[in-house]
Length: 395
Ligand SMILES: Nc1nc2c(ncn2[C@@H]2O[C@H](COP(=O)(O)OP(=O)(O)OP(=O)(O)O)[C@@H](O)[C@H]2O)c(=O)[nH]1
Ligand SMILES: [Mg+2]
Image (cartoon, rainbow, N blue to C red; front, side):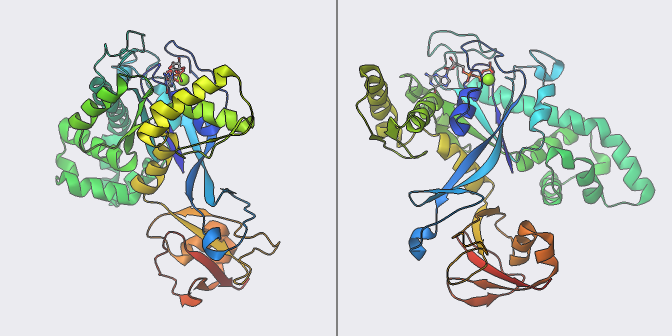
């Protein structure tokens, strides 16, 4: 699973990345600060099942803080994209190749309207923020389209000549773009036209639809801490009622996580409050008071964790499943309690879970038990969010 961060220069992508990963990649108030992609690990947050079972977790593949399970996922921050990047403007869009495998994109926009489409700085409110949404999605769609277009004629010749299955062959060809068979099938049903009769417009529509399915975009309306952003957020939501738009202050989240790490405060990512742990300087207090009043009280969180959670749970519809070896102590063979939390697709089965743990486990799969009901589950049972499962197998 990978999340890609995209947006025009200077929108706050790297600040978002640093907040989400607590890294120190370079941030600056000028365009094209980032040239090489930053790759890191962030965490999706879910209520852990430990409280329900009354146990204390000792997680291995994830972490548990105050009853919340944090599961790692890869996140990538790339260079800014400007209009006509697909024609080579700015840094072009070659760097989009860095996010070709991303399952979902977070589009960071400067909701304060203080940067133009090239990332040049102006007075807050002087730039129409709705323009970003349109141009950026178009650039990404054109990038996707151009990759597909380059191979299209050859693909059609090949499947016709060798009588191959289009969906299978196409998916194989573009698996590097994170495209799966079900994405291609869905895009084809939505286009409702014979692939052999596609003109350029049809191919663009098909590529765009496939991009929307295989790389959905959510919008992080960043710099929400700047006054005018509140008004712009309303404009964005009105203009794009079907899009997911989340108010974000990447800078505030970065400060809170950093202060938590320095033990100045206790802060759990995504929460609406923090606890001050010691006497702080006047400057620190001023910053924290500002964040509390203008962001946490108003929007319930800084929005960074929300973006990651919405991307993983609402958009990609992932569920969390906990495999254990001992159904009584909920441990693995080393005594770790609820050691692993796996992100699975919503229609995954116990056999899929076995594969995720180890292919040997899947090969020798006998049965699975739902720890809550102690009932035996069929191989085809559809796992549910929060399931705790024991798998029986022979080697
Ligand atoms: N007020 C405010 N400023 C922010 C926020 N996030 C980022 N910034 C500022 O916006 C400027 C650009 O931030 P970056 O994170 O470097 O932006 P970027 O999108 O990675 O920029 P490029 O790498 O140049 O494309 C910096 O001055 C940041 O401090 C925010 O939530 N609030
Ligand atoms: Mg950057």
